[in-house]
Length: 276
Image (cartoon, rainbow, N blue to C red; front, side, top):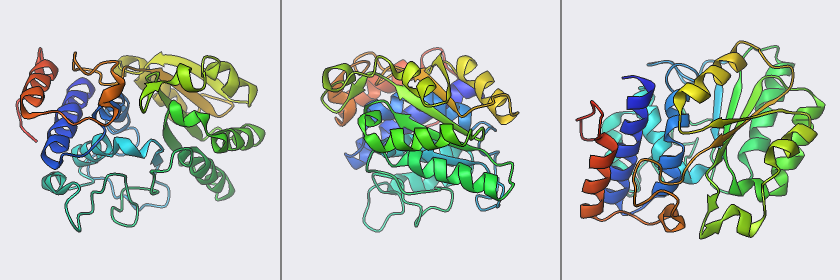
């Protein structure tokens, strides 16, 4: 399946599993689906790739609350059994509300507390340089979590060491729990902020794989002389009209009727038919 269809599949799967478990963060899952589909369509992991090779690329989901979209992407890359998605949030399940590296080999680090993923990713990138490894580190952050100071300490360190082997992708959906980001702490100067810390900072349409993919492939090919920040402009709840741009869908779970409408909207003009 191509990247666009994979993104739709991730959206349908994450919504369906959230409804079954009555738990999840649908808005966050939908906004980053195109980014994850691009990453897991041969950039971070190829199908069937062993998750424990020393020189494997690293991926860190800093916005750990988008776990269902991440699990769906892992399953599509054959790094997680698809049938196991139905165990999400059940007692003793490996699939908790936030990714846990102790439970799932393909998960590089446990995330949940916001502001931790980028510092860990910078550490991974610095370790790769010291080990003379060509592996790359990909970190997906939420925009709201960039209000945490730990990210800027990490950004400063990466800029100082000119870590060309790390990319931070910001899911810039302009919403956090309950409010727009600009009503909490403004991030209007995000591009300039990363640039000031020594990063190459670019903006793209984060809900368009054709916009994201070429940049990530350039990064893989060593096309940047500084750490790379991709500010991916997205919509929270992307793909479902009654969810898009609505802060309440940060944590709200769709009813059966809402789920049916949402799946129909996502499937429109799509070849997808398989139920998760």
